[in-house]
Image 1 (tube, helix red, strand yellow):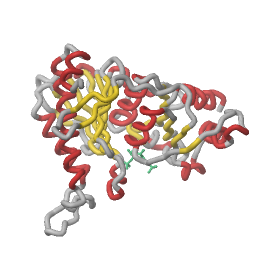
Image 2 (cartoon, protein in one colour):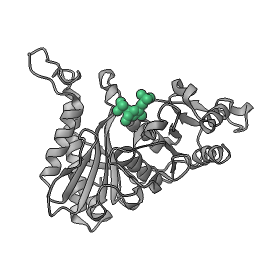
Image 3 (tube, rainbow, N blue to C red):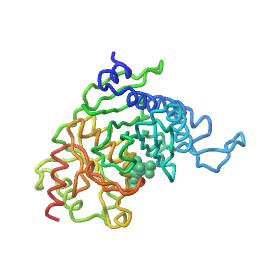
Length: 315
Ligand code: FDP
C-alpha cells in the first residue's frame, strides 16, 4: 500500500511543503493517541478543573494546540501559525516558506460523548501573509478521530484519504475521493430555523417536501454537529452541509471560521468534485480581513449546492 511519504513525493516537488504536511500528520497521530486514552486519564473535562489525582486539567483543545505547536516549531519551513486557540498569529521560523492555519480540535463540544472530532489545517505561501483567499492555499487537510483515524489531504490535485495503521504509518485508503453531484442527504442544525434567511428556508422546505415538492425526490437529514464528521461523510458518499448566515450570526459574519474551517474544507470538497459557497460567492474567493473571521458555509454535492445558490439568487 502507498504510504504518506510516497504520496507526498509523487504529489509535490516542494520538500518544505511536504515536510509541513508530514508534521501535521504526526501531530494528528499524537492527538489521536491522547484522545484514545483521555477518559482514562480524566482529560475530557474543561480547563481549570482538577482530575481525580488532583492534577490541574487542560482542556483537550489546549493540549491539541500544544501538540500542533510543538510539531510545527520543530520545522523551520513554518513561518507563521494561526490557530483557533491563539488570539494572535504566532511567528515561527524566519526562514519559513509557509503559513499554517489550524483548528487543532474541531467539534470539541462532542468530546464528552465520544463522537468523531478532528484537526483541520490550511497551508498558505508566506509571501501573501495570513490574510489570503482560499484559492491561494498550497494544501489543506484534516485528521478525523473516529472509529478509524483518517487523514484527508489535497495539495493541488485530487483529495486523498489515508488511514492510521497500528504501527503509526499513514496508508492511502482512498486515492481520489469523489463527491457525487447528486445526493439525497442534507446536514443543517434545524433548531436554528427561526433565525434562517429566505434562501435557507426555501431550500430546506423543498428538501423536506421530498418527492411531493419541487426537488422531486426524497431527502434524509444527517447532522453530527462536529464539522469534520459531517464533512467526512459528505466526502465519502455525498450530501450537503450548511451553516448559513442567519439573523443571529449575521453580526459576526457567520458561525464557522474562514481561515481554518471553511477554506480547507472547501479546498478538499472541491478537490473531490464537490462545490462550495457562502450563498453569494465561492468560499475560496472570500477576501479575508481578519485571521479569526467567520463566514457562512455551504458545501458538498455540486447539484445540491447549485440548488442553494439558485435560492440565494432569487432571495
Ligand atoms: P464546536 O463548537 O464543537 O467546535 O467549529 C465549530 C463547531 O463545533 C463545528 O465543528 C460544528 O459543525 C458546529 O460548531 C456545530 O455548531 P452548532 O452547535 O451551532 O450546531
